[in-house]
Image (cartoon, rainbow, N blue to C red; front, side, top):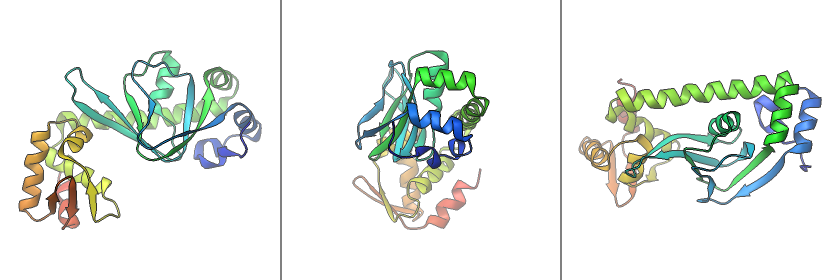
Length: 221
C-alpha cells in the first residue's frame, strides 16, 4: 500500500468516489526513475498503467533509418496515453519513454486496471477521457509534421522549451528530433533566426534575444 493518498495529485483521480480511490491506493505502488533513464522501451508490453506524480517524461519514436520524432511529453499530473493504448490492445510499445528529470510515478498493475475499468464507471470514464485528450494531441503532431511550416513549429518549440529561461541547451540534432525533421533544416532556420537577431547561438546553447519576435513567428501560421 502506498504511504500517501496520491490520488489527490491528479484531477481525474481526485474527482473519483472515495471507494474507488481507496481501491487505487491499495493496489498501486510508487516507483522512482532517475534523470536520463528509460521508463519504457519499444517492443516491451506494458504490465501497468502509470500516472506521473512528479517530473517529466519525453515520449519519442524512431524510424528504421534512425530519425527520431518527439511525440509528446508527460508532465506531472498526467497519465500516459501510449501505455493506456498498449494495455487496452495488449500490444508492445512502439515508442520510447525517457525521464527528462528525476521521476516519481504511480503504477497500477494491469489486473487491477482491468478490474477497476470493468467494475467502476467513474474510473473507466476518467481513463478514456484522458486517453481522448492525448489522442487529439497526437493528431496535432501528425498535422504539424505533415502540413506545418518549419519556422513556425521551431519558434513554437523554442518558446515552449525556453519558458521562463534566457537560454536553452539544445543541439540542432536534438531540435530536429523534437520536430521530426532533418538537422540541416533546423540549422538553416536557426541561422535565419540568428540573422534576424531573434536568438544567438554558441555550441549547444541557444540564447533568446527577442522572444516577442519569435512569438510573432509562432503565431503567424
